[in-house]
Length: 444
Image (cartoon, rainbow, N blue to C red; front, side, top):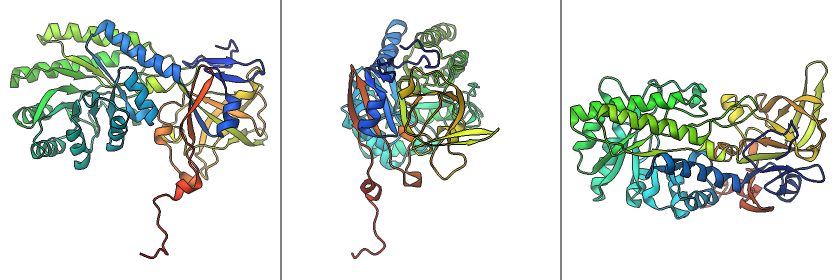
């Protein structure tokens, strides 16, 4: 790790080469930009694996038998699904496409759980036919549709019910999911969640494993998780008293925060696991409940800090007394998070890693949108056209949310390990842009 104060301390294996350039996992970032082009998503494969192992070991210590389900929505090209499988984790999928990717990667179906608030009949049929470990049912409509599909296919599908605990997670409004006013889950109001439990228990085609709750993302306040545990425990006790049902599994979702800027102070995985498992043990004893098998769904906290994005700086425009804009060859299409929920990032110039910052600039994307900004008020060493900008902690929700807005091409993805780089997603071409499109003047 570099000792330069302006190069932040992230989970990546970051070093400075003898040429004064920034390196990740032994790969010179300026050379990667030259070889693969920019924008470019770069991942430290070792960092990805270490984070998976950190979750795996923490639960082995505090809750043997627990299952860690990597949240596919964060980042799931085929190579990532294969890596997760190799590290002994399962997958939390949100769509037929993520399910297909998981199965193509060889993920055992019993280690796949299907989440989401509006799964189609086709997606549910695919999940049932694949024999996945569990469908996390979000609403009464889905409960009825899944019951019918499983019956038609002659299967008994394992399910969890997603419970909306009404817990404040102290995060951005758009990534809160556990509050009562939410599109997700059965709210703990008017007996709705209890009624959903009764319906699931009455079905001959569904086997109720337990409950699921997820309170949000980018969370630093671990007491929010403890409150969620207590809320679900209280619900499980009421269900046992009213319906005689005792849970077998509890899925507490994900949401652990990561470091985007120096202001962020993420908590260690082991501390999160210790606190939620202790809260669960104490709570089960108090309510007279057996300990359920514990599941969690980390996504951002595995992939986020392990990835960065490289851009080539183009124009530099100074408005005297107001601001200096540094434009890069990407923006909203490869990272919509800033425009979507005001995400904040840190960055350095990869080819000037030994040069201290001497200017404060704002990094702009190239789309035809005033809101296409990546970073406001960033200290950098005199940026010039042709410099390579490395933006940190872009490993989650960038590749997976990328678009072709303004017909920009989606970036390539590279994994780095022990000084070697491996292309895992090819850069789009102009031909790719038109694949699937039909000419108005075609002749049938």
